Length: 454
Image 1: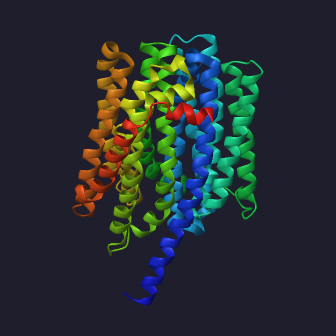
Image 2: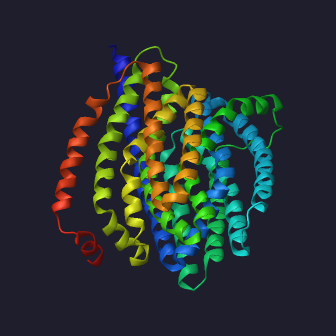
Image 3: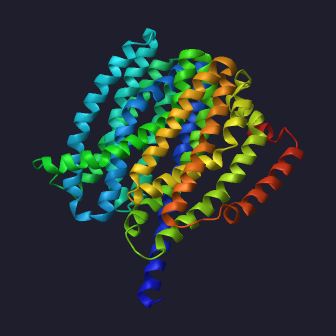
């Protein structure tokens, strides 16, 4: 290996450590802050109110988030490879987003009319929908900062938004307001965060108001459509169970299930910093003919197993006590639900990472097919399981979906980048997780309440 090669490898490793550190710390703070206000909301709003909030968040996200996240992934990948075209990409993506968001809102309104929702639920859905549209533009700005590996700035903006929502949301709940006003607090924090992110982008750039390049817009639409499809189907297999529970079981059941889901989601997003830090570098190295890309993904997978397996095992053992301490005695049914959902957690984070690896290497069609398979599997089996087994059935289907996705994703990564042996990556973290679980089982069950009680 040449001196330049060694230096490049060292520089890449240093950037990965620095980027991951910034993002991981920001994710820890912001996601724990977001989870904190959600836990407080669950206590103040009760099962029904929290169920309405969860349904509104997921139902609007299914229609709106897939556009934002799909375009953001395309933006990060494109700017990482062609940083000189940042202004052109950003102008074109914003123009495309205006059109797609408007079309999605029309479709969403038409679909919502078909469901017998009460007035309060409709209000919350409308408020959350507007907030998610605004958040989508904020995410575009953050995507640019990520592509240029400005992780400290991304981290600060993420933390600020979560603190803002925590403050507004807590004030609303403490003053006795309910779910509509709590949703309005989320909207206010989204608006403020959007303008702050926009101000940060305008500092180094001044030519975002030039005319649109319609050829580039058409190219972006064609290239990003499969990515948007991936995000859409991924959102379905990850979240559609809450929508089906709301329609088939009711508000309270959805609230109990959503409480467990928020813990899983927060844990997954905490580990997403690894994926976010690797994605720009993977996008650049995917075209290299050496084995750097393969080494990067295996190293990241190893770290995800080291982090994910103990989290799965520890949370499964302590779930009932954890739920009791966080949400209170009224959410007792959430404990067993969380135990079922968290067991395949390590598969969930690995599936997401492999999906991003394949996306960074332009294997979008393969990821789309896998995500579509997972979405169909999840919907069909939820429709069969929920009427018979309710919340527990939905939790089991979520785990089976992740197992199916893992098999499909692992087959894909072996096909494109050579055979990767699963056992060498997983046996040490698995052994450590088993040992930790045995210790936790033998420990006093009052450990978590004691910690919270001080």
